[in-house]
Length: 157
Image (cartoon, rainbow, N blue to C red; front, side, top):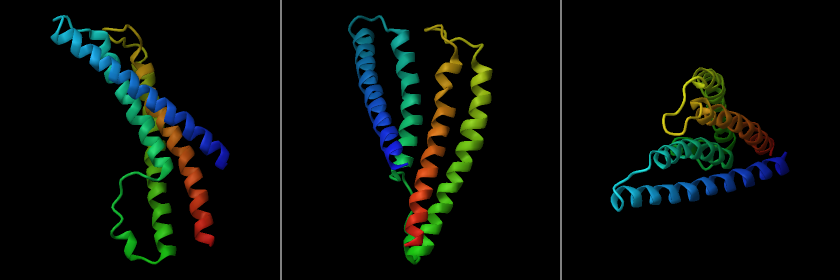
């Protein structure tokens, strides 16, 4: 499982880095066309916005998988190690419920509803753009399983 997680981590790292590079180029192009040529590009603006949504969903899943997400640990740190681990497992479980219910189930419904609506500037179905929501949820569930297995090992020791 560790090898699969490392492989998914590597793919997500490079995907997020690529998105960030493309967004930087698009926003720079947008600024140049808007302020130097007085002719802003609607496509680059929309594409940068959609790439930001994808970066947020996939980057959030990646950070969750690395267990480097923001948390309030000052209360948890006052407990003994075994209780700390149980609290970590519980919080991971709550995030997994959110990912399954809202991101995957709700996201799948939302994506199917948006397949008939086209983006005005790029003329592609909005469902493709919002597909990052259920895919991000699936990635979070994958990382949940990996993290729970690690925490179970930690709990046994």
